[in-house]
Image 1 (cartoon, rainbow, N blue to C red):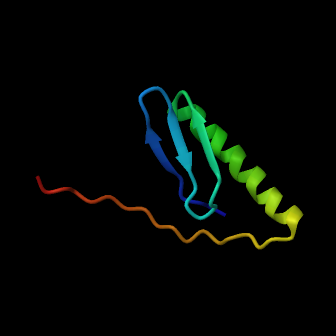
Image 2 (cartoon, rainbow, N blue to C red):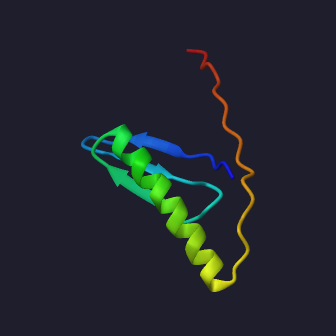
Length: 70
């Protein structure tokens, strides 16, 4: 499954979250690191859901960009 990941740049780090997997987050010092960590976090998150017998949410979030009119 392919989940959308939202990445935000902070003053000293990058944060990532998966909208379709509430609570699935990661923080890293570089974009490359946060992407590596969020991939691992998704795996752990899904493993935990399976272990608990909880349903695996289907990816439903869509991402697009809009040009802002200034």
